[in-house]
Length: 368
Image (cartoon, rainbow, N blue to C red; front, side, top):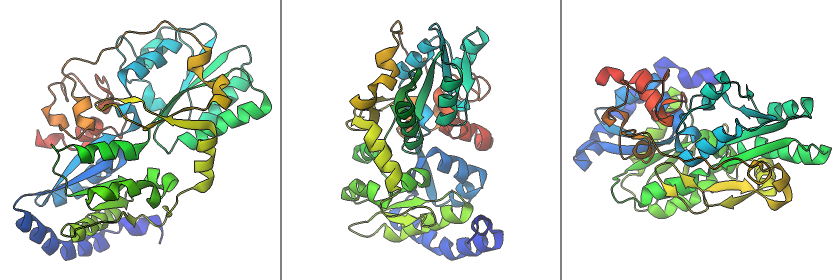
């Protein structure tokens, strides 16, 4: 099937008509709306912009959590990244969605206006190319992401080592999603009836990469991002609600395999090692991040370029930490859509198009 078949309007309508009795039945049986957690920021955006969230609203409460990697990056990491822009002979390279992430005192966009050498790249390989083209400069790539970006970042360090590049450095800030999802499921304040897991991450780690979640006995499905993907994934979850045990269901088989991308995982294991970083909202999570292996530490900017240690604090009244933990919705933040907008974000959840606040700002404000 091609991509457009998953956007077919008449097929979607038939699927919804068939699903509606099940939606009504499950809601009546629970005596409340069904709570489904969407882990991925791309899913938050997709549920909203396609109208599927509105269609399901009488029966289902779609709870947003985690969102995008930018949103869960700790404030101390953001401030440290900004600190590198103030070093001499340094070019900081980054994805575009990092430019307006607010640090304690500034952001990358403001630093660029003030004269810092900052380049926006489409991929880590472009950052390595910049290093090769500027041998008299130290080039720093800000390595923010989940499992999806880690292989390409690892590839640049492996290539840099092979060709003897000495002026390329990475700030390692990749996060691993299964430990964070486990943390959400262990939180007794949540009453979750099912989980929609991210398709992009699952391409790398496979269905098998989520198996630790099965011990929580909560219906769980890996989903794609098109309207028929979303609705069919919800139906699969509803059919599992009354069962006593659950396996991770793969509703994205056109891209996700049982064990994921073996080559990508091997590359990550070679260059990175697992550690326990701090997340925004979560604090320190055991075995939830990637740091650079000792064999590649000459590319670790933290060990090779010294900066003053920045003082960090979160913006007063910003609820981003609670939002990524699915404790709050953007509407309950005093800053949302007033002081904090995509044009002038005060919290990281408003920066990326896949940030939870950004998605709600773009698609859900009519309900304010």
